[in-house]
Picture 1 (cartoon, helix red, strand yellow):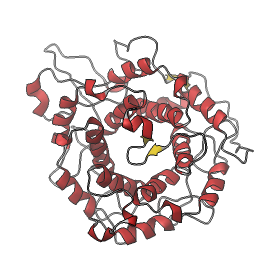
Picture 2 (cartoon, rainbow, N blue to C red):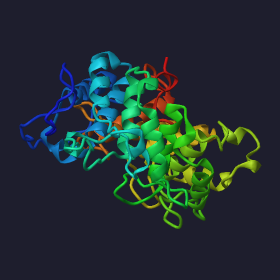
Picture 3 (cartoon, rainbow, N blue to C red):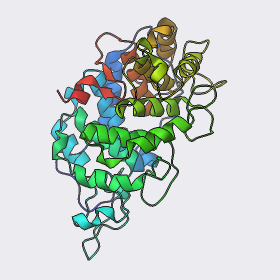
Length: 375
């Protein structure tokens, strides 16, 4: 739990800490040759109820951990394992609010803070001091709210969008937080997803963001996190998904005339397909080992483009099975203990592979289609 004097409404929120220490047991891969849905449900349900003690170092990312856990259960068709009302109340308690509308342009960002440890009490004048709202936490908050069926029209979207526009830089990139930090494609994606989920593009200048994204495409077809940097699977996803969300890229664009695309599609497709390694998994960069999460980051790009049918799905599935833990969940590499991040992206990867019994994904938003459509 965080250190705020005021906790969210009962029943208690998810993701409490387990104060016990690790037993030091060695990693062991799953002995199953099939996707073990029931064990994955059990693993994520356990994470929802109580996080292992080693996650305390990620306290600042508690909202993100909640997003992976709750959206993962949704993909697995097990959202009934969570108290949706309690989750919504808990998530909403992390939004920062200005004292009055005149503060919306004071340079601060009035989005969602990542945890209780980034919340501070109001000053004597009623002004929130040390507002640590973050674009990534805001994306995770809204995605989680949509997952549990909360109507986002009830969120204070004006505060989010008006103040978020102040984070956009002259080159089109975004700071993630008002006190300053790196700018890269991750935060362009977060801003685009936030605007898309709220149904209002007043939070960003799309044309400037598009120009920034275009500058991030490298000579080899992939996208670096910033202009001139090495192509990266995560950066490539952020670029392509952002362009799709912002309306600059058609769905399944490879089946239409790609000549009008704002990016180099043939090179991008080739770069993505080259990321499937000899072991069947996907790597994030050339000469790197295959990693569970890139089956989503690169696989989702291929889904958006309409090129997923060109991968070796059987080989990918076999690789992912080797990353599946006998305890439920997925590790980063074959035989490693599971963690929440890779467990979520292992589930998303199997959804992309159309594993029976799993809910389909909104490739651009990283949540289920049902959650994205608000059904």
